[in-house]
Amino acid sequence: MGDGATARRMYEDAVEYLCRNIDALRPLIGPEAWEASFAVVRDGDPRTVAWRNAVRALHHAAAAEIPGGLGLTSTMGVGDWPSGPPEQSVGWVCPTDRCARVDLRGGATAPETPTCALTGRSMRRVGG
Image (cartoon, rainbow, N blue to C red; front, side, top):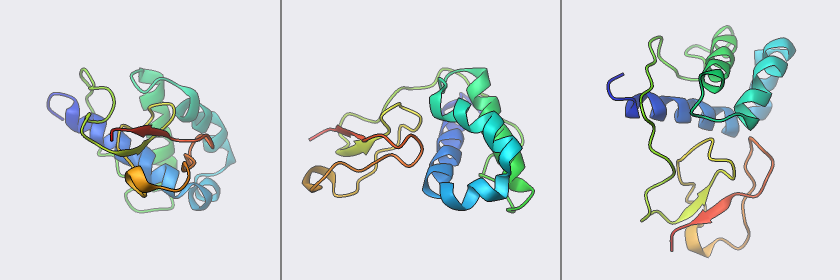
């Protein structure tokens, strides 16, 4: 996966997909795989091997029911990951930095702070 930036983006995409489809994915993944891995993805440090292994475990469990699982490719390599969204972005980010992608739901004009589907906590506003 090159220098690691592509790998990080793929993990972020997988976690973002998980967040956006959490209610549909939980029963498809099954209670054993869900209980063993979800807490690590929710609470763990995205820079660790344990966190990446947990994302992969959820991906493989989802792949049994959904073609492509969470969207990871079979070969993943991770180098030094950049942290956080670009400074010029305006919007909302995960409160625990699980995903560096900026959610632009309303950006600076959003009437209220959105909630992160993964953690259930209020998202952080960035930029602007």
